[in-house]
Structures are given as C-alpha cells and as structure tokens.
Amino acid sequence: MSDSRQAGDLGRIEQVHARRVWDSRGRPTVEAEVTVATGRAPGRVVGRAIVPAGASKGRREALELRDGGGPFGGLDVQRAVGHVNGEIARALAGMPAGDQAAIDARLIELDGTPNKQRLGANATLAASMAAAQAAAAAAGRPLYEHLAHGIGGPGEVPRLPPLLPLPQIQIFGGGAHAGRRVDIQDFMVMCPGAASFAQALEWTAEVYRHAGVLMRERGAAAGVADEGGWWPAFDSNEQALTALVQAIERAGFTPGEQVAIALDIAASDFGEHGRYRLGLDGRELTSDGLIELLLRWCERYPIASIEDPLAEDDLEAFARFTQAVGARVQVVGDDLLVSDAALVRAAAGRGAANTVLLKPNQRGTLTETWQCWQAARAAGYAGIVSARSGETEDTTIVDLAIGWGVGQLKVGSFARSERMAKWNAALRIEQRLGAASRFAGASVLGRNPPAQ
Ligand code: PGA
Ligand code: ZN
Image (cartoon, rainbow, N blue to C red; front, top):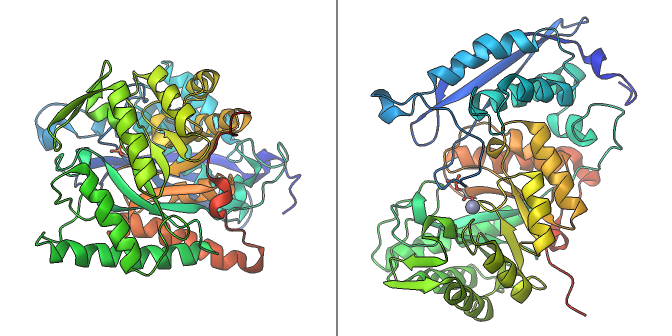
C-alpha cells in the first residue's frame, strides 16, 4: 500500500464492543474490540486493546470511571463498558478507521468534559487504542509502522523512522506499589552502554538476578512488588541505592557507564504543600530539604534519571531542582505533567523538568497523548512512554514508543508476564527490523543545555 493512500481507504468502523476483563492486580478493567469492514479481502479485521490502571496517580489525570458500591471494592467498570457498547459504539460506527484524529475528536466531543469524567477515560482510551489496532490490521501493517505517521493517518505528517527505546527497568519496587515499605517508588536501571535493545534486556536480566540473590543473602523473602521489582526490605531509602549499585557491580557492569540508576521518587505520594514525610527514614523535610537529599544522592550514586522528585503542587521547587541537576540528570514529570500538552508547555516556561512521561490513560485518547509528545518535543523535552502499575497483556504502548520514536520505555520490572509481554514485544520488533533497527541508547536522555 502506498503512503499517500487516504485514511478512508482503510475501511470503516462497523462495530465497537467492550467487555470487562482483569488486570495484574486482579481488578476489573475495560477491553474493547473495534471491527472494521475493509471492503476487500479478508472483508473484516478486528483490533483489540485493554486499558491499564495506576495506583500512584496525579490529581490532574483524566478520570478512570469505577462503579463504586460493593462488588470488587467499588472498582468494577460496568458503567465504562456500557458507555463503550452504547454511546461510543453508535458514535464511531461508519467512521473511517484510518482517521485516528477524527475518531479521538469524536470521543472527546462525545464525553464533553475536560477530564473524560462523563464516559470515563478507561472507556474512551479502550476505544481509541482498539481503533488504532484495527486500522493497523486493515492496513496490513504492524501498529508501530502504522503510527509512524504520528496520529493523523497516512499522508498527513512525514514518516518517522522507528526507534527502539532505551528501557527503564525496575529492580526494587516501593512506595504505593509495596505497602510503603520504602518511600521511594521505583529503583530502576537503564543501560546507556548497551548496543541494542536486546542487549539492554540481557544486562538488566543479570542485574535483576543478582539483586534477587542479594536480597536472599540479607535474609529478605524473595517476593515482588506490584510491578515485579523485588520486595524492598531495607532499613533506609538510601540502603536501596547501595544495594542497587552492588547488584550492578556483581552482575559485572560499570555503574554509571554501562548501567545507570533511574529513580521514580513519586513525591506527590508522601508530600504536599512543601512538606515531605519520609516514613522509613523517620524524617519530615521541606522542599529544599528534599532537594538537598536528592542532590546528595545524585553525587554519591550513578543516577541518570529522576522522576517526580517533588510533588505535583510544588512547581517552583521542581524548577529549582531541574536547574541544579538538569544539565547532567534527566528530570521527569509524571504526576506533574500527566501527559498533558498544556501542562508541559507551562512547566517548560518555568524550567521545571526536562522530560515527560507519556501514559495514554492519563488523558484518555491516543491523539491527546501524541499532542503532549509534540508539545514536549517543541519545548526541547525528552519523552518516556510508560505503563501503569495495574497492567495486562496489552502491548499497544510498545508500538507507540517505537512508532513515535519517543526513545525511552518504562513498563515496570523484569518479571511477571504483564511486564515481560511488553519487553518481548519490543524484542520481536527489533528483530523484525533487522539491519534497519535503530537503538536509542543514551542519546535520548533528557538533559538541559548547561548554563552559559
Ligand atoms: P502508577 O505508577 O501506574 O501506579 O501511577 C507508575 C508511575 O508512577 O510511574
Ligand atoms: Zn511516576
């Protein structure tokens, strides 16, 4: 098929159907299937997608609609499923499958609220992602290739060459994903020294394995947290950092050069109004106290990336921290930016963060996620496509990371199939691309130009 083929040529949406399925925490979530009548053999194709769910959410995320009431702790999604099978199915029927921008605009208009609170971002995103999957199937292309046009469909923007992401992989879990056993949420590694995505996974597998041995030696049970990282049995937050460096060294790598540390502080979970309570360390810190602590960690440990170092309501402190380390450390906004283009522009104006975390369910459509990535690029930010702590076998985000050339991917640890499904999906794409595959490596890390 030629790239100039019009979006309408991929066929029209015939049916949209949703059902309740279950995520990696055993909680209900929404799966949607979009059927497209292609008008040529094989006649019909189906695209399917499942939405994830966060636990440490930003306050300005789009709303995930839950039923409330008794069953499943109030977390059922029958209302969201009903919205897909009713209003959304009727609204999308007959639309050109290849016009993702129009499909998402219809979803946004139909919901009619700024944060998807009427239909639920879980309803709209399930439909949005399933439509993209169906369009790719109708085009006879893998999704990452279909998305290489951005969002508008064939012919609208120049093709982007696929880019295999530098992965951020959790070794120890913490925060809201581990019963707050440690305050810091993610102790991760990145492999800036690896030559390919496959090699980054090989190196991480060794670090993860050695970290497990280390925990057993310390007498800690070898259980895992929500995203598959080792359950954190530490006496202080800093001890987790020491253990991580030890695991990197035992695995035979040079800390910092070959394998570096990435942290998600998720500070909104233990602080607001400029006060931060580190439960494990038994201290309360001001914004500047927390900044000081993190700067000390950046000096002592080979840290290449820090996410949400301060709370989402602490923009000025976020900016001060970025000014202090942004030239050598990637400073990532997750709860701060919630994948929102306008918030990225506002934060960039204040010099807060230099990298955006992209989670499609923080907004509720692929188009808005794409627009956020475009705003981030315009502001000189780097990007990381990210999963949620409640995940499934769905691998749509892997195609977003590769097709949009975002450069980095974070989907949790190196265990549990809802995580491994995504690493394995990217491996398959790297192998399929063969000589044409490009690996992001360290070049994609967000850093501000040093001050003159
Ligand atoms: P969440 O955590 O999916 O529970 O929000 C992931 C993150 O904070 O990056
Ligand atoms: Zn985060």
